[in-house]
Each structure stands twice: as structure tokens, then as C-alpha cells.
Amino acid sequence: MNLLGELQGLMVKYHFKPDKRLSQNFCISDELLEKLVSAAKLKSTETVLEIGCGTGFLTKKLQEKTRVIAIEKDDRLFDLLRTELAPKNLALRHEDFLDSQFKPGEFSKIVSLPPYSISSEVIYKILEIGFSEAYLVFQKEFAEKLLAEPGFEDYTTISVITQYFCEPEILFMVESNAFFPQPQGFSACVKLKSKKRFGDVSDEKKFIRFIKDVFRYKNKTLSNALQLCVPLLQKELGIDKETLKKKISGLKFKDQKVYLLEVEEFVELFLHLSKS
Image (tube, rainbow, N blue to C red; front, top):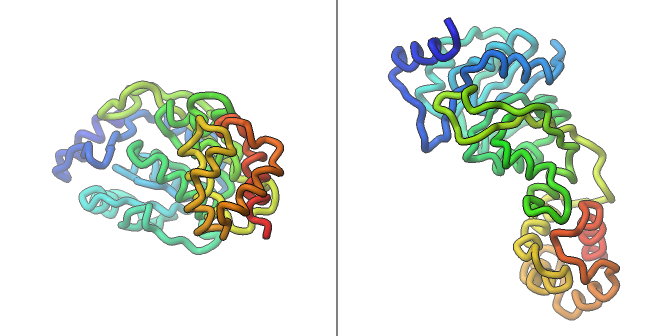
């Protein structure tokens, strides 16, 4: 039986259908699952995290390779997974991934087809948790944002933060007919490889909040954008208006538009502003 037929059988057996509110598009392409698992090069000694297991088609393939921490929020799908999946190599958790807590080193890799509606939230969460490599399928447009370079329209907050933590790479494109129901347009498999950070940022959560605030004014010069960020700078870095003016005057790229700054320049900027 192909995966679409298997999915339809599970929908009848467990009385469910894809929930649009939860952005449920179930993978029905065995080829996609095989390519995703193959790309991750999993070792039996590793533990892999899967976010939003759905019907467990990917989970089963991961279980064949290594131990899996599988997270599913939906009540109906969790009951399905608990019944249909073998217990070997499996830690099944019934919770919202965005609220999940993990011990340091609890897993090393992430292989997942997360709901597209929470793509940004998933990225910020996994960067906060930490990992060695992640293999994730997103909508093509979102995937391209993760790799976008300064000066391009899709260069945004998430571009800077992702590239600060990781080396992002699009491995392959995925057609919409790999899912049921079909999402709009193409999807893309993205590899994120953790890397050594630029500079010496001691508080990365503050750095993320800083980037988010500055990028609200992405089309303004850095000098003007920073002056509009005074409330956050006062709260996070203890910088008042007069101190900010002095710090801005020493910046070599103060007249550059925000969306033209490189990731390294944002780090340099944050460290400059953080100095007492």
C-alpha cells in the first residue's frame, strides 16, 4: 500500500482529517522520507528529535536508524502514534514543541517536517535549545529567507539570527504533491549546521531581541534605526540617549541601511553598544 492509501486508512480508523488550524499537511512521499533520513546520515549512537510526528511515517524510518524523541501536540494523532508505533528506539512526548524543555545534550540532530504555520517559531526554538545538525522541510519562500544575503528583500531578522548560529543550506526542492493536502507552491529541505559564533556575545537572548528590534526599521540608516530603538537599548543594555549618540558617532557603518549590514557587522554593533 502506498502512503496516501495508508494515510486514508488511518484517517478512517482514528476518525480524523487534516486540521488547517494546525497546518497539518501529511507527507505521502516515501521518496521524500528516504531522502530526508539519508541526508541526516544518522548513527545508531545518536538521538534525533522529530517535531510534529503526524501519522508517524517519518518516525518509523528514524526508529530504524537510531533513538527518536518524537513530539506531537494533537490529541488524536498522539493516540494514533502511541498505538501504531513500536516502542523500540522511541521516546514519545505529548506536548507542544514550542513549550518543550530539554536537557543539555538530550539529542544531537533534528529531522522533521514541522507545521509550516510555525516555521519561524520552530527556528527560534531550536536555536535556543542547540543541536549539531538539523534537517527540516519548510515552504520554499521561508527556506530562502534563512539563506538570504544583505540587500535582498527577503533578508530579515530570521536571516541574521539563523546565519549567526548556523550554516544554512538548501539540499533539495519538494513538490507539493508530496503532501496531503497539498500546500501551495514548492517546499525545500534545509540543512542547518551549528557553527562557531562570530565575536563573543555573552547574552545571545539579548542579541536576538536586539536584532528583532533593529530590523523593524530595516529601510532606515543604522543611525536613525538605533535612535528609534532607545526604549529597548535602555532596558536591555542600560544605554540612554546621550550615551547612544556618542556610541553611534564611533560607528564606521552608521550611515548604512540596516538591511545592508552583514551578520558580522550586527555582532560588532551589539558588542560595541554593550561595552560600558
